[in-house]
Length: 147
Image (cartoon, rainbow, N blue to C red):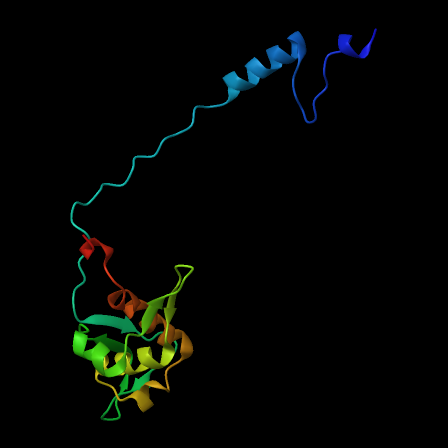
């Protein structure tokens, strides 16, 4: 018997031969058919933001301009004048990542919630980031406008 007469052995657990074919058929019959999930309903209208935006400070409070401790920051809708005064706090780099300019975002956040920037510096960093990332998309271009 030479090498050409032997059945080829492949790496892994490959079933060959008549007995193995029977075993493969039994396994196929025993497996239940996959359950398909219904796709979520498609909304024709995109999500619309409602203003003012409220962000709960879950890691601490911050003092407002009259010395009261607040647990929720309420942001008004940004306008072009805010970007003109403080700069655009978000940009997209060459890799397509959104980068937040922390200094610009801090000043925009202060302007939108009406709390002085030095008072916002007392925020917990996790709360600060929650606010910054909540506002981030409003400073990025909407590609639907590019005809």
